[in-house]
Structures are given as structure tokens and as C-alpha cells.
Image 1 (cartoon, helix red, strand yellow):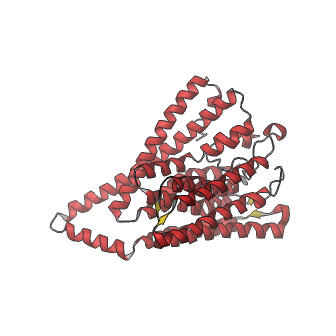
Image 2 (tube, rainbow, N blue to C red):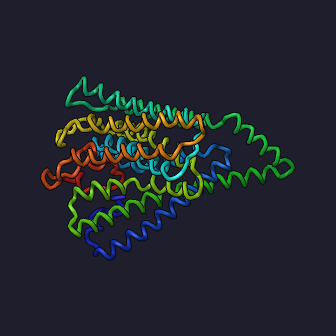
Image 3 (cartoon, rainbow, N blue to C red):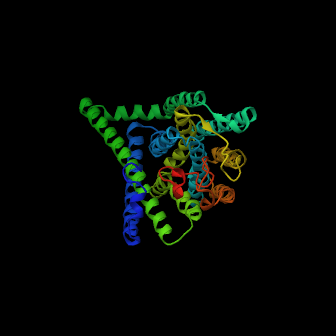
Length: 389
């Protein structure tokens, strides 16, 4: 996004103009989320695939791809440690904030078979990441890093995950639904019907891609404009990065969640959260580690080992909690609303801990550690210009 509209562009604008930009961006964000969710829902219906699978693959890929691009570019430019903070912070926010909020608002459905499988992949990938990080630190100390071989392993696992996810969707129930659809279609023009179905699938994919692009771009515009308004009114950089940016960079997933709830596509919300968590490990960290080794220790941070002491434990705590909730929900077929509150509380505790372990950017010249200890969700923005200094 910075290549199209650099953050400096916002610094030249009057607060009133920035407010208009923010309002337009918010409207575009809502419309983009509508297109994305509608396209995903129609695609699931057209292909006979459960919505949770579409959410865990196509939708989550659309909202995670921009973050992956930012992390890979940061690795190439020498800010490789950003990828770890991005990925782990995203998992914490997606599961703790996004799912926690959605779960607290409405009773979410739980597909026992699919969630059990996808949930174990979600939890297993996070445990694998944590194990590799702690093992690397135990062996190499302050020089600990995730090398290119780890990145290659994650990308291979990513390919397997995508393939297996689609195979899981071909359950007996889905096959039966397809058979019934084929029987109902008998007597009509098969060629014309197939052509129309293909056109519908293409249309749905175009809606998903276009909607995801609008969501990502409008999120960037909204975050930057609001951050600049706050800066011009004298709000400290550390406060901007810890509040506006830390919350704002969750907007793509948050808007998809809100739109899914508003339109009754609850499975998309659940699938998007689970899929995004998996992709943040296997896709974001995998691709970034292939681009450049990812350091685990940040010597410039207030607490150099903050990633090991705060970020990873918070991620594992939230995902273990979510894993327990999946087990309980599998028995009833739904996530109870009370399950959202401990997830939200854990996310809030993590956010407070992140602020407490972050140095003032005016003292050290940067607002966040390379592992994202202040702003763990820097998808498309530079919180307080931290990565340019």
C-alpha cells in the first residue's frame, strides 16, 4: 500500500480533509466486506463446499496475503524480525479479539468434524512454531533465528494444508448433496447448466478478490488518516501505535467477522479465524523466512526476549483456550457466548503487556521492536514511523 500512497502523503493534509478520507474509507471498508462475504457464501453454495472451509482457505488467504507481502518485503529490506511479530500478533488478535468479540455477540455454530480437524492444524502449527523458536534460543542464545529451511518446511506444510482442506470438504454429506443436485438438474441442458455454473464460480471468485482488495486498501487509508489526525492533535506516538494502529490493523478480519454476523454467515467467521491462524504461521512466517532468516531476539527492545516471554505464551494460551472451546462446542454444535469473554480478556491482557514492555519511541527512535512488541498487527502501516528509523 505504501508504494501507491506513502504515509507522508497524509502528513500534508488538513485534519478536515483527513476526516473525510477516513469516512469514505470506512464506507468502502464496509462495502468491500459485503462483497467479500457475499462472494464467499455464494461460492460455497455453488460448489457445495461448507462455508467454514471457504472461510478457512479462500477468505483467510485473501485477508492474509497482503500481510505476507509486507512481511516478505520487510525481510528483504533488513527488517526480518517484523514477520514474527506480525504473524503471532495476528493470531492473538484474530482468535482473542475477532473470534472472542464475535462469540460474545452471537451463538456461533460449530461443525464438529471440520472444526476438530482444522482446529488441530491451527493449534499444531502454532505449537510447532513455538517449539522451533524456543529450541533455537536454547541452542543459539541471542543469535537465535528461524532459518530458510524452516521457511521451506512451513511452505510445504502450507501446500499440504490447502490440499487436505479441500479433500476434507468432500465428505459423504457433500457428495450426497452433489448427487441430489445432479438429479434435480436432469432434463435440462447439461452444457448450458455447466457453463452457467462455471460463470457463477468465476463471478464469485471475482467478488472475493475485488472485495478483499477494497477491504485491504480502505483499511490502510482509514488507519493512516486517523493516525495522522491523532498526531496533528498532539497524541503521543506510543499511544497512537498502541491503540489506533494496534486495533485498526485488525480491520480486514474484523469487518469480515462483523459482516458475516450481520448476514448470518457464521461459519465464514469461524473458518476465517482458524484459517488465518494457520496461514499466519505457514504462509507469512514461511515465506518471510525463505526471504531472510527471522531473528527471535530483539536487542533494541526494552526486554530483548519479549517475543519468547510474552508473545508466544499469549499465543499458546489463547489457542489452547480456543482448542478447549472447540472440544466443548463439538458436543453441543455451537460456541456459547460466554466463551468469547475469556478470549477477549486474554487479548486485552496481552495488549497491556505489549504496551508495558515497549520503550517510548521518542527515547530510542523507534516505536516498536523488530518483533512487533508494540504493534503486533502492522499489516500495511508503519506504526509511528518505527521501521524507517
